[in-house]
Every structure is written in C-alpha cells, then in structure tokens.
Length: 331
Ligand code: DP6
Image (tube, rainbow, N blue to C red; front, side):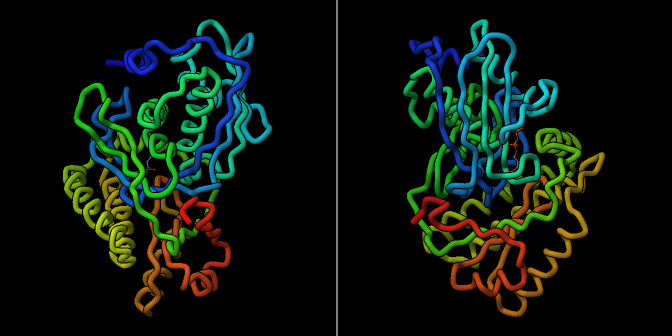
C-alpha cells in the first residue's frame, strides 16, 4: 500500500482539475501524549495513539495555485531554494496530486520552522485544506486528517482546534488512523511557549523516531506508557484535574526523551538552557506552584499552568509567550 493508492481511494470521483486558487489556515498543535514511532513509514502510521492541544491562531496560513514550470514555495514572503528540505518535502507531497504542472505555495507561519514548535504539522494541515479549496473536493474532516497524515503524522491533528486525539488504528491501509476533536473545553488552561533556541535542529523528528524505534531498548516500554498516560489525560480533561493532566503530559514527554537517550547513535535535543528551565519548574512545583512542562523533538519547553497562576509563572519566565484561550479557539 502506498500514498498514491490511498489518495486514489479518498479522491475517487473528485476533481483533478485545480481551480484558480485555494487558501486555508491550520493551527499548530502541541502533543500532551506524544506520537513517537511508526508502524508504517510510507503512510505515517503510528505505533500508538496520541493527544494534543491546538494553538488557535498560532499556525500556518497557506495559499496555493497551479503554475507552469517547477514548484515555487514561499515561506513568510521568502522564496525557498527548491533543494531546501522543506521545499523538497512539500514538492514530493504535491507530486501525489499534480498532473503536469507546478504549484505556487505561499505560507505565512506564526510558529518558527523546525524549532520543535510543530510547524510542519500546521504547514501540511494548511496545505491539505488549501488543496481541498483549490480543487473543490469538499472532503470531510476525517478524509482531510488522513491526507494531512500522509504529509506529516502530527499534521492530522492540526485539522482541528481544541483537544484532539489521533487514533492509531490497526488497518494496514490506515483508513482508521485519523484525528478527532474531543468534546471538551478547559478555558482556564494555559500553554506558555518558552523558546530557548530557534536554530534548525540537526536531526528532524522523522529521522529521530526511526532511529529510536530501531535501536532503543527502552522503546518496548513506550506503548504501555502511552496507554496509561492517555487514560490519565482523558480523566484529567473530563474532571478538569490540572495536576493529573500536568503530571501525565510531563512524564510522557520525559519518557519519550528517555527512549531517545537510549537510542544509538544517542539523540539529545536538550540544551543546557532546557535543563535549567526544567529544574526551575521542579523547584517552583516543590514550592507549591502547579506548573508542568512538555517538550517535543527540540530544546524548547511548553509550560502548562492555569490562568490563576499566570502572573506568578510569567514572573519566573518573562520570555514566555502565553497562548491565549481565544487563540486556542476554546472559549
Ligand atoms: C515529537 O509529525 O513531525 O512532535 O510523521 O515523520 O512527519 P512525521 O513526524 P512528525 O513528528 C512529531 C513528533 C513529536 C510528537 C508529536 O507531535 O506527537
């Protein structure tokens, strides 16, 4: 089964003729329970389910149109060299849809690319939604989530706002592996972005998770850990039990990083500043401040806290950018 087979199924009976222009927006998302490891690399099928929170108005806005000649990819007003990793990934994805023409893709992103702030997720989700608009497919959200997953796994969650679960599924064709929003709101929950470095990372999450699955002795414990954390997160969200949510999210992220440390060659996305911030969070928590963090495949931390504690948290992390509840589209 390859990507083209899936796209043929999903687009059966729909137009392959692009209209004049398509445009769409998709939010970035931060996983509280991570996607780390694939059971199928071609289709980006995950070993486990995962659960995330979308970042409302922090994300990617994309316009796409067909053009003569090769693809042109613009990011934040700058044309990317066609051989840059991001442009190559987009072009390879667009190959799945094109018939003898190029695409002009213009993306404005409010999240830094490749700094562990889930920019490929919002980028691919916005592209899929913009293609849906360009071709007039009128696909449902499940089909759009599957299409986004073929570009980047975590992108399937960026089709939705709020809390989102990506069901791992078990079918070889992945038709049961898509994201769905949870029917839950938590208006007081805050996410703070602590950007410690925006440098491009040396090892992307795709290569990092492959290496981890193949070489880490700790990886066999990961699916069970995820199952426990997902249960905790569901209960925590339902009961608005913040300590339970924070603990599950932080412990899940640290366990993911533990699988990376035990891979070979070892993978460590942490900078000294990351560890410094973690220790500060643990100290503050010991002193009674309910503050937790999560981290992706990068050195930056995402802080989790309640609105009532915002001023205290901000006083310790003045550089933090708080994602507002209306930015998350949740209240
Ligand atoms: C650590 O979705 O970027 O952010 O499917 O290969 O494109 P590909 O990987 P990607 O991996 C994201 C990994 C993560 C955890 C998460 O977002 O769940």
